[in-house]
Image 1 (spheres, rainbow, N blue to C red):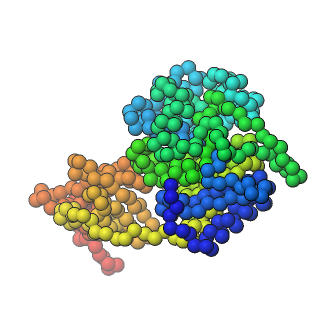
Image 2: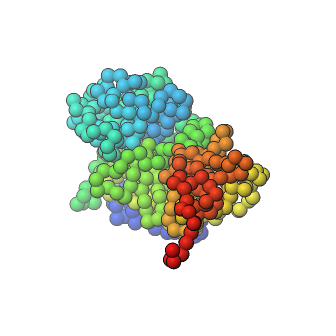
Image 3: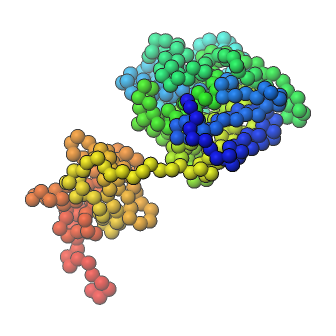
Length: 459
């Protein structure tokens, strides 16, 4: 992954200043960060408490729950291959777990109602060998809340998804991960176990400037929830994939599905949502997607903005201290605001169907004014002419209709309804009638149009 056009010196200094504050005020042994712009690494930097030993873009840190996003990609691959449906109960593919009524979709989005953690002892600081079976991970009461009602983060839920991958692939989670994601994306510095050069994990005393080394455990069955080690370079490759898709791993429509909120947030947590293995947060007027992670000795964050085409990764080797999620969000904001994305040049469509072109222009749903625009590959876009309203993009279907892709009309059918003489009478969008004039008397409008038509105050 080569560097793109260099950022301005003022932008680079602002980025370095932000991570310097994070390392200093967060009292972290080291911090390393990097930014992706337009699909290429635009900046990287680091700070360390030891002169001459600052980590670089090739230094591994443990990334904790960012691992979950990798596991989610493996599950979506199984779905895309037809080996499972997201609405399948887990029991269909992985029987006897005690949580088999939960669906694959609910597990991916943390809405299965499962417990947040395993039974004691604390799984992040103990070897996975003490939990050799799924029963040891789930405990006697795996489900604490009704399934499908709301988001409740569950680490054991991702253990179940990892075991599901193993059952359907006939290979270990780590083997499948390497073969299906890491190798195709060129992520050769992302591994289940640390490989030099790598950082050591530390706990910093909350009230004194002293440190304690943290244990590094193999998590066993819990690996799909938080095992991986990675670098800023590899994680930016992963961020680019999550923003664009890659047919070698997962098509663009499936990664877009991962980014879509899957369940209402927990009470009081209205600033963010969770898709399928991806977190989504609103930062001022910007949507950030990605994941944060932590394990004893390490904190990590990966955020990307599709609209700005900017991603940032922040890694540190401290149990607590730097708020890596906030720092990564700040890095995205610094670049996006200091050097806004330059849009692609406008270009006309390669060709146009004249019958389709005749549909372009203003349409009316009752008295609400809309405009219909042509898009690439016979697609359509519907937008309100003024004020707020329901806008949507539509994909052309082989039968001459269009299917909504987003918003209120997602999945709904748009079709052209013609009169007996072949002229266009109206557009039907999920039973809503759009006409060329407000309540056009010549069109088939449910309920008809009042005799006499439009009138003034004097009746």
